Image 1 (tube, rainbow, N blue to C red):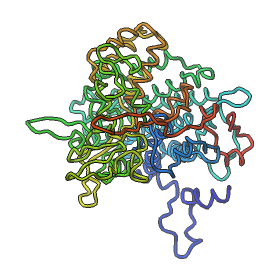
Image 2 (cartoon, rainbow, N blue to C red; image 1 turned 180 degrees about the vertical axis):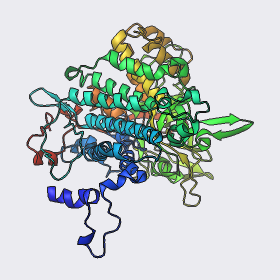
Image 3 (tube, rainbow, N blue to C red; image 1 turned 45 degrees about the vertical axis):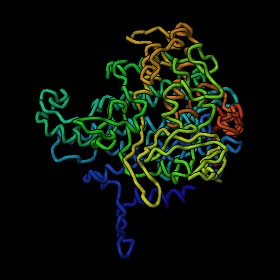
Image 4 (tube, helix red, strand yellow; image 1 turned 60 degrees about the vertical axis):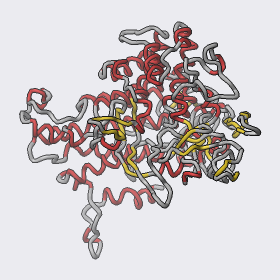
Amino acid sequence: MRNILKLMVLVPLFLTACDDMFSPAIDNIRSLDAMYKEPTFAQGLLANAYILLPYSSSPNTDVATDDAVTNNISDNFLKMATGSWAANNDPMSQWQARKNAIQYLNLFLENTDKVTWSNTDNISKMFNDRLKGEAYALRALQMFYLLKAHGGWTSDGRLLGVPIVTSSEDVQSDFNQPRNTFQECIDQINSDIARALELLPLDYSDLTNSADIPSKYQTIGITNVGDYNRVNGDIVKGRLTGRIVEAIKAQVALMAASPAFSAGTTVTWQNAADYAAAVLDRIGGISGLSPNGGTWYYNKITSGGATYVETDKMGAGSNPAEILWRSGIGTNNSMEADNFPPTLDGKGRINPTQNLVDAFPMIDGYPINESSVNYKYSSTDPYANRDPRLKKYILVNGGTQGPNNKVIYTGTFDIVVNNVPVTNKDGLNKESGFSTRTGYYLLKLLRPDCNPSPSYNTQQKHYTAYIRYTEIFLDYAEAANEAYGPMGNGTHSYSAYDVIKAIRLRAGIANDPYLENIKADKDKMRQLIRNERRIELSFENHRFYDLRRWQANLNETARGVQIDKPSSSYVFTPIDVESRDYKDYMNYGPIPYNEILKWNKLEQNKGW
C-alpha cells in the first residue's frame, strides 16, 4: 500500500531536484516548495478541497428513504435501500473523498505562512489570513461529513468518530491509527471553526469607506479600500465566509445534540439553538425569512415591467435572500432530462412516494388523517384543498410540466389523442425504465422552461443550494423546541412556534388552527417540525441523515397510488412499491471494510 501511495499520489507533490535522473527532464511535475513563490500553485491545494465539497445537485439519497424511489434498477441507492448495504458496498461512504480533501488542506495549512502572497507585506498578510481561514473552515466541513457518514457506536458502547488527522501524511506516516471519540471530533471541528471565524470576514464585499476596513488591518497599514477589496471584495464571493462558517457550526451542533449521538457528546439542544440563532439574528430573525424561499430554484421576479427567472439575473457570487451558500451557476438541462416524464423526453428517474404526498397537510394545516370539518380530506379527490407546496414540489395526476405546460396523466388508463385512445407513456409502469413507479413525478428543483428533446435541447441556468436559510430556521425550531418547549425563547426573540408559523404562512397556510391547537404540546410540535423539515427540504439530500439522527423508522415501505378511470371518475388505489430492508444498526454507517482489513487499530461500528 505504501508503494502504491508513493508512486500514484505523493510523487507529484514531493518529487524534488530530480531532473538529472531523467532524460529529457520531466515537465509538469512541481516540487511542493514551488508554492512559496507562486501563489496560484499554492491556491491549487485549497482549490482541490473546494472541488471535493460534499454536496450533490441530484436528490440521490432521497431514493433510499420513504420520500422517493427510482425507476433506474441499477441505482446504488435503490440497492442499498433494498438490502445490499454493506461495509464493502457503501454508496453513502464519505471516507476517501473527505480524507483526500483533508490531506490537501493539511498540506496547505502547513505551508501557507511561507507563501509570498503579495510583494507587499501587509497585503500578503491579508491574503494569508483569508486563505488560511478558508482552509480551517473547509477542514471542519469535511470532518463534519465524515462524522455524518461514519460516526457510530461500537460493540462495547463507545461513540466513536474517525481518526483526527491535522498534519499531512506521506509514505513515512503511520496510517494505523485508532478512531477518536465522537466528542473529540466535534471538539476538533469547533476548534477549526473558531480559527476560521478569527480569520474570515463575515461577508465578501467591496468597501467604499476606509473607515470600514477592519481595525486589525488598519493597524498594519491597510488604509486604501482598493487594497482591502483586492483580497476580500466582491471578486471572491462564493468562497467560505464567516457567515457560512457560523451556519456550519449550527449544523454540527444539531447533529451532535440529536438522539442518535447525544448520549456520547456534551453538545446540548440549547447549544444548537444558540448557534442557529446567531446566524438568523444577522438577517433580522423571523423577519428575514425569504417570502419566496420555498421555490428558490425557479422564482420569477418582476422588475421594470419585465418578468424573468431570478437565477438568470444573478451575478457572480450574488445570492437571493433564501440562499446562504451555493454552487456556481451552470447552464444545462441534465436534471430535467433525468426527471421529466417520458412524453417530455425525460427518464422520470425520481418518483416521489405516496408517503411524502401524505405528509403535506390540508390548506388549514391539519394532517390529512386529522383533517378538520372545513377541509375534509377526500380519498376520491386527494389533491384538493391541500398545502400549496404539494403541487409545487410534486407532479400529481393532471398536473403540468415542461415549456408548454403539458398536462401529465400518471394513471393506468389510456389517453385520447385526436379522438383515438393511445397508451399513456407517462402512466404508472407504462414505459419500461422511464415512467413512474409511484404515480408521481418530480417538480421541485426542475425548470419547466428546459426542453431536453433532441430537437430543441433547451438549457437553462441552475445552481445547487449548499445551505439555505430555511434549513437554519428549521434547525433552530427543532433545537429550541427541545431546549425551551414550543413557545419558549431562551435568550432569543423568537420560538419554535414562531418559526413554524412563519414557514407555513409563507407556504400558503394562512389560517393555521392546527398549529394553534398543538402549540403548547412539545411532542406534537416535534412531529410537526420534523414534518415541515421533510417538506421544505425534500429532494435536497437531508431526509436520510435526518431519519438516522432521529433514530426514526428507516423501513417504512415506499408506497404509491394506482389511478384508474373506469368511467368519468378516477379511482385511487394505494399500492406498495418498494420494501425497505435496513437493520437497526444502520442508523450509523460503516467504516469501509477494506480500511478495517488494513488497519488493526481501526474499530468497526456495531453490527457491520
